[in-house]
Image 1 (cartoon, helix red, strand yellow):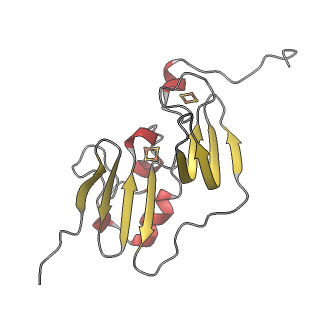
Image 2 (cartoon, rainbow, N blue to C red; image 1 turned 90 degrees about the vertical axis):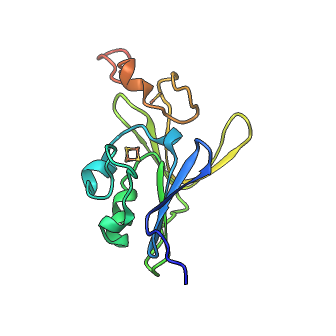
Image 3 (tube, protein in one colour; image 1 turned 45 degrees about the horizontal axis):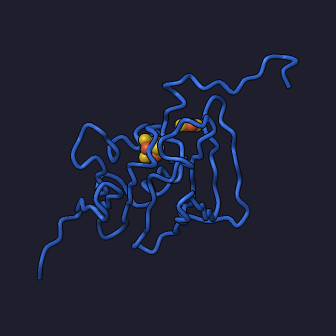
Length: 158
Ligand code: SF4
Ligand code: FES
């Protein structure tokens, strides 16, 4: 019987996504979608640590704790599949869109996002660029911070 490394890091497609898994859960991370909002780092620092390799340690918490933290990731960069019989991420048919002050549009739901090349991105969560300066449109890439994107309107500007 072969032994398995419980936290295998493997590239699914070069430069696109990485998977980390054990017997209970598989975590996918898509760097292109990550805008370093840090919900994962703050929520479960023993699992998510950008200064460590691998940066995701799926054995450092329960599958339920990891899943709950991943669902806080607003961009869909982190996703999971549970293999312990626990609940998968719910995908409400009705999508919600949240306009973030000075930032992107956060979407949640059973999302099918078609980019300009016709590629369909099926995601449970996504951050869409609102400032117009992302190099990864239609997704936000964090550039709004560098350009000090401001969504406030002065009184009388409409
Ligand atoms: S919560 Fe999501 S977007 Fe934020 S740092 Fe973690 S993976 Fe990246
Ligand atoms: S809103 Fe984030 S890059 Fe445009």
